[in-house]
Image (cartoon, rainbow, N blue to C red; front, side):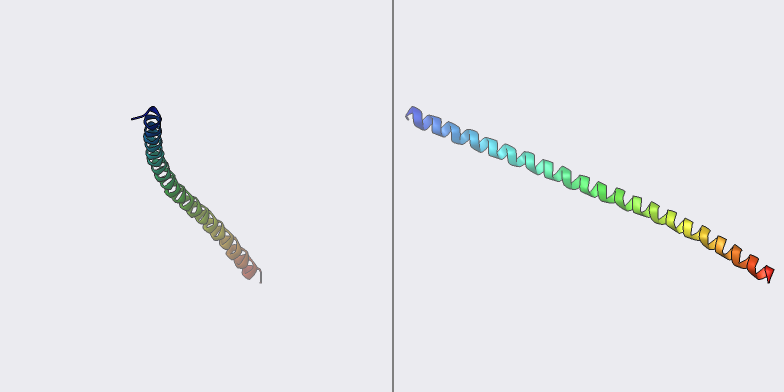
Length: 77
């Protein structure tokens, strides 16, 4: 076997190992990113839930004030 064919074979083997290593790394990276996406979605859902609860509380307080105001107006008449 000539030295040129040995070099070509070695380069092919090295590039194959490099490609296989990169593919495994990329799969693990993508899997981690997908998991982080799920975590972000859960956090976003919890944040929206907290905001909705806050808005509901604000609406309840405004309703109480409105009813108090109506009750005062009815007593005045």
